[in-house]
Length: 199
Image (cartoon, rainbow, N blue to C red; front, side):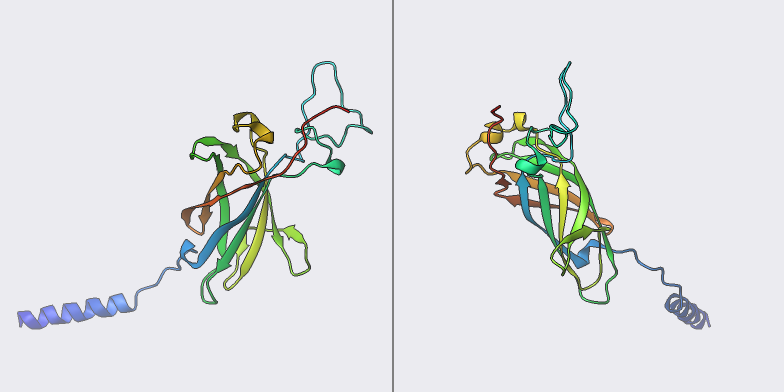
């Protein structure tokens, strides 16, 4: 009699588990591959240069100057980062991407500073970038771009005019869905910039 009661209890428990409510799962990082396609180290063309005491920026002659001293129309190159993203086929959920930290490291992995990311854009079939909400849908392959703040060139060995063969390491910490992930890329491109010489 007792054994029959135990079997009945087990059967009822099994039925309850089978018919229980299944909670929806949030997006996870397992369905998206993220790679750093390229990084260009240069200036920050959206940041005005700081003026010295007694000086001013002329609205017609100097309004296009950037913090690195290069004119937007005459050679300023924005520090940027391109990401390649590939999502799993249909059946997965849309995944949110968020950049948490972008670190610049030297040849011996010594820290050279942190770069701030902004203005995420997406390369379209029309051959141009458009604003991006940092979400990738199931089955998508995307090429995304971010503007980055300029490196602190005073902390970089050799500064802005270090040898063109000098390589760096970029390390990006990001959230992909609900998981944190770190991706790296060696051989960062440094834009060739002329010295700030007054002519």
